[in-house]
Amino acid sequence: MAPRQAHDDQGIYALGVADLPDPLGPPGVRHDVVIAANRLPVRLDGDGGWALSPGGLVTAMTAVMEGRDAVWIGWDGGLGDAADSAPPARFGDMALRSVSLSETDYADYYEGFSNGTLWPLYHNGLLSTRFRRSWWAAYRRVNEKFAKVAIETTEQDGTLWIHDYHLQLMPAFVREARPDIRIGLFLHTPFPPSQLLMRLPWREAITDGLLATDVIGFQTPTDARNFLSLAHRMGRTEEVMPIDPVTEIIVEGRRVAVGSFPISVDVDRIDEMVRDPAAREAANAFRESLGSPKHLLLGVDRLDYTKGIDARLKAFEELLRDGTLDPAEVAFVQVATPSRDDVRGYSNTRTEIEQLVGSINGNYAQLGKPVLHYLHQSLPFEDLVHLFLAADVMLVTPFEDGMNLVAKEYIACRTDGTGVLVLSEFAGTAVELHQALLCNPFDTAGMKRVIETALTLPVEEQRHRVRAMRTHLWANTVHDWAEGFFRHLDDVHPRGQRG
Ligand code: GDG
Image 1 (cartoon, rainbow, N blue to C red):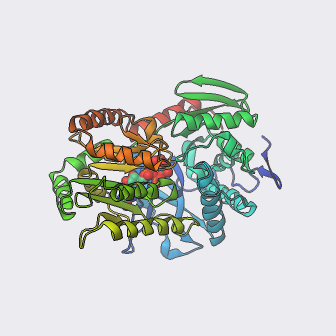
Image 2: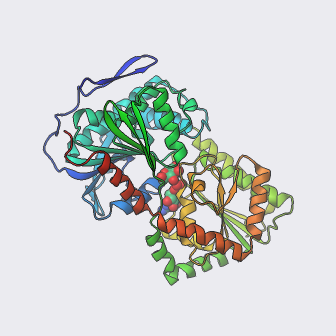
């Protein structure tokens, strides 16, 4: 098959395979299930060892890969050939294969195209989106690099599950060289309306990259519809067959399934942690250490401008200012996990948030008793569980979020049925957890009213809502999510059918 050509505003980019290795690549250890994501799931801890990284993708995938013959391909976080940063060959059940990045790759592919172009564009252009041709060239180059490793690592008729917006061209490179591989891609971010995506000078190549998969998974039906509308506008869909819950399209005579596969959490693991009596004791001790406030509010997010941390702090500040909240009765804990520190825009977000924290405590704390406890740190997951157990009200207020696992983790921790989840309408989670108190993070007055309602919600009403959300979570776990995805791959591209 001739390499597909994709236009951009500077000419033609060939998504060809001229430089790719022979179909099965050089001999080596091959795996049945290959995960590809920008980063390996581990990072150096402070003591020179390796630990699991925080973040939604890692949390979900480590849960579902337990006990499988899987390898994870990703960047190890080092630049150039720094041997001291080489990750172990295995971590837990999973083999690791690193992809190395040069400083230019990092600046142009990661900071540039992935986080300066795609991340803001896919979050409705929240921070100004920049389009640079050198970033695009690096994005292509690094996607090709990942593809080469996947081609070498995946066994005949094996499964390659690619994750997220960093690697949307990778399927096209892999498909050209290894049509036997069953390729799935799951996008953890939202997928924007085609009207917004059409601004991207390389929209054809991104569309074709995604269409080279067998299954493309999105977080919500809206994201899937947005992609289908783009593919239609690009004239790529030969036939469209809605087969609930996916839509199958025919692309160059090949079936591709496009659907919504809402990601979830490992509820049984969380339940086990919560039912340990030591967890309840830790939560109580934590609450006492804050002076046993009448109301404890909590926010847990990666420090990212999409998460709406500033919006919720402004609402909290106004509630204190207008006397609705009494600083003697309330405590707010905000964990803002360090993230993408060196990407443009993130340090401004951090500065803004920290100024708000200073101003709120400056005005409303008492000596030795802050009203707002702010941690710019990554905590062990056990500590997060204790916080979820201790908090009366969980504030999840992103401006735009693919899903938001924190909201689901909070509900999974509330074994006694109490607690209130205040949830942005613009998180994918809001499509599923209807019993949360929904808010619009762009509307400060509205958000204040919702927080007030949350603080006065009768316990019976809390239980009614939390129980309904727990029932939904137990019927839709992270394992169900992964199995659903694999099932569709088996259906669209049965093992051994091509190649
Ligand atoms: C993307 C999409 C989508 C957070 N701080 C710490 C920590 N975490 C864990 C949480 C949770 C995860 O990280 C964050 O979940 P989010 O859903 O907010 O995810 P993002 O990182 O934005 O990632 C998002 C997700 O992918 C999954 O598809 O939901 O929409 O943007 O699990 O508990 N974990 C630990 N320490 C921390 O300080 N251990």
